[in-house]
Figure 1 (tube, rainbow, N blue to C red):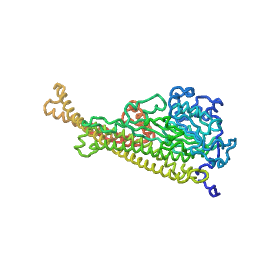
Figure 2 (cartoon, rainbow, N blue to C red; figure 1 turned 90 degrees about the horizontal axis):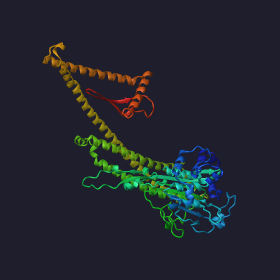
Figure 3 (cartoon, one colour; figure 1 turned 30 degrees about the vertical axis):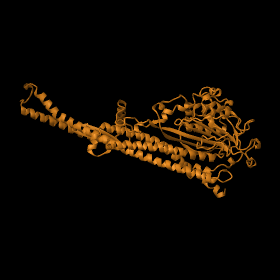
Figure 4 (tube, rainbow, N blue to C red; figure 1 turned 180 degrees about the vertical axis):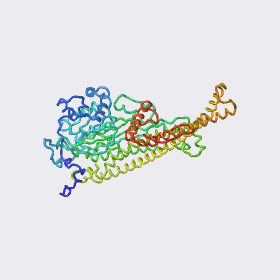
Length: 625
């Protein structure tokens, strides 16, 4: 690098693949992180020790979630193979060594070993295999990972290790935590938490442990899958960690469907969307020595691995790629494997998103078409829709908007993750050194993968725009329905005001005059005649009308003074009265707090209307506090 480049500030932040990852660097770790901590008298179970860097460290809320997830798992049960830990066979591990063991000379200083001396040795494309009886239980995973990864007396090295676990449960989580080496701990922590929390992430990190550089590539992509589910499935629970959140993640979409007509009484199947996710984290010390952790949800398509699917002699599909790739013809470079996995799963996730978005869009359009007269300005059409019908459609619209917001949040986070990844200073920079001595895979391979991935994310962006348009349409519909309900409420109150005026100004004076004339003549200062009766009625009417006008005038004057008063005692009185009203009637529509400022700053809240009813009509004005 030239002096000009070195002095350029941007070069200090340039994202480049570390050249040290092209050298022979075997991690020299004789035990797992948890075992080393236990020997140092660490307190707590395996997961608690795994999640803490040091004793007395402040626990993160993220790690508390993982501990809560694993609270029912027990190391003794896993070691002895009791219960689910010894019965559920779901995990898949693939350990391979690219370099034949007879040609590797291990020593205590392998930082600068030249790999070309051993890479020229002719060997099968599949490398040297450390076999295991896939699929594995949590007990088998613990026992397999307890074996030394390097320098084993009987087994070949596990240069490249793939660990695939569908429907991650507490027992598998504890088995991974107990066996993670030091340089893999941070990557595995992030992998487990991001997967459990349904977080979205697409990043490459350069980390290190005590000056030992390692790379970490992660993808966590949640998505919504549209499925037909029987009602009983939504309540399914086995009491295990992998199923605890099943009911929470399932969203019933039956409310979107138009009710079946009498001519077609057969109800539609129960449809819904299920929040699923795929996670892959690759962490290693060099281009040929790395571990990949893959977690995937299969609650919607529950297909566990079978023993016949895991053959080393015949075709064996790589369940992480899950595109028909033969695991016995492995991809050795971690970046190539990462991009290929991302390309395959983004294509699958795009299909799930298309199914979910277009289905929801179709149901919304069908419902709005069925109730199209509700937005009509035709008086005849408006009369056909009662207030209760308008309220029902208004509630449906609000519920649909909440659904669209939830779906849009997940899709937008996925699109934004890719935009950050591919930007000028994004993590895509770690893939730009192809066709050099630090990268064994050709430039055209990475270019083809990145172009294919970017094309799929463009289609996801198109789906995002459709959801935004749908939400905007629903928002406009909600505003129109709210305005109609307000108008109808105003008309109802006006009708009530007219009835009140008639009662107060007509019936009440007549009744009062009648009662007055029923008194004895001796108590009345004038002669009781029909003419005097009529005059009395009109006098009482005039007095009631005068009182009404006086009340309206005073109320407007006091309201104007109350709004514009800047005297401190008045402000304090307004504040005291406001909180007093909240204490006595906390659920009233006019009881509110200024959410934007948290204080009484004189802001006018949009859409909040106070209605004053008086004899003769109503007055509507914005509430000001």
